[in-house]
Image (cartoon, rainbow, N blue to C red; front, top):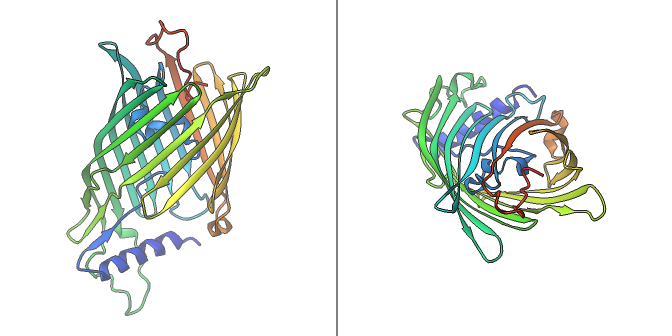
Amino acid sequence: MKSISRIHILIVCLLSAWAGSSMVVCAQNEPQTSMYWAVPTLYNPAAVGCDSALHVSAFDRMQWVGVKNAPRTFFASLDMPFKFKKVRNGVGAMVMNDKAGLFNTTQLGLQYSYSLNLVYGRLALGLQAGMVNQGFSGGEIYIPDGDAWDPSADGLPSGDVSAMAFDCGFGAYYEWRWLYGGLGVQHLAESTIELDEYAYTQLKRAYYFSAGCNIPVKRSLFTVHPSLLVKTTLQAVQYDYTLRATYDHKFWGGMTYRPKDAVVLMVGADVGAIRLGYAYDIGISPLAKASNGSHELMVTYSYKLDLDKQKQHAHKSIRIL
């Protein structure tokens, strides 16, 4: 099992090389996260400034623990709202590093959102612009013995290579009372990253649809938070169905079902301005036999601003409940 990821990457490289004189790989650049509801700016720039607070967030995900070269993702972001000429805006910045197999991808982005007050609710439109740097550890490719495998074949980098390309995204985010939802598009330009003379990757456009609500339970200290995240490249699709509950705005827990992939258990607590969370993925795919599951840690610091002080009924976002 130790060489599964290396062999998989090798097969992808060889098949791509045989298809032509250059290696074209559509690498998986989208990170996986089980506590997606806590870091909406990861996939939707319109979510920056979605409530009256400054947020500093980070999470670290160790996926498929026990599998060699399994994905490891780190994400950090900062966002806040502000008003200009009585119009609500949001700004933010994010950095993401994702290691998967022999690929190492780092994404940097600046985010901005502009809000429109509707008869029912608020609609925010957001943009993201930045760079993606991608590296490939060609020196770690495992080449089996035999005439069928030619280490000198075009399209197989013999050493470590990396390159950078422009990246951009778009999003829309809507909220009304206890309801919220959004659509984010990442890698809008589908930029090509030239790793080597014969090797390059393409950032495939990815779409994210999210929706959820915060339902207070009458005559109790509980709030229920059902939510949904749909991720697709229009070639593959993945669903996350989540049900959480918060007690007294301090302690929370829940479960996510990701069909054909995992059942996720998550717990956390809000300690003052700090939110802490932990999620454990129990694999239900064939890969689960070789893995000890996935672990995810999340921390968010929130500082409430006076942006909507004049509105006594200011919306309470999913991020500060």
